[in-house]
Image (cartoon, rainbow, N blue to C red; front, top):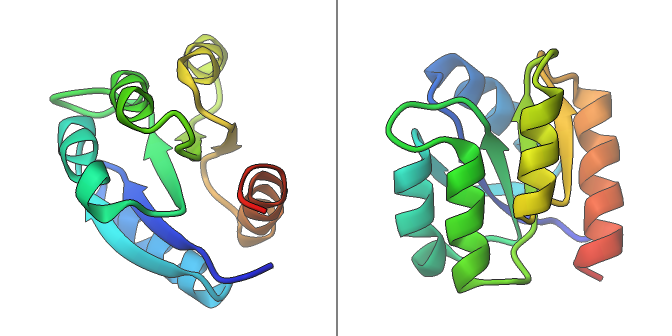
Length: 125
């Protein structure tokens, strides 16, 4: 798999640091970080990453609404939701909004690698 350009969206600085490290350790490049959905939706058209990892629960604008807004400007956007256990309905709402998959928190490197490869293979090749 070719290295991907990735935007990480999460309201937790700790989660962002962990995600950036894992993504870079997997050989990909984090090209942008957003701390809420509004910032992600505003920045996406300028950044145009291959893939977005999107937290669901954030202040200002949640990941589901941000996914809808990103999909409205780029229907080929590849968004992977990053979510906690017990948010199944939110995950389904995110998939309906256009997300291509999800990873459960706490994110493990092996699971992240699996999901990135699966999603990239299906939507970016």
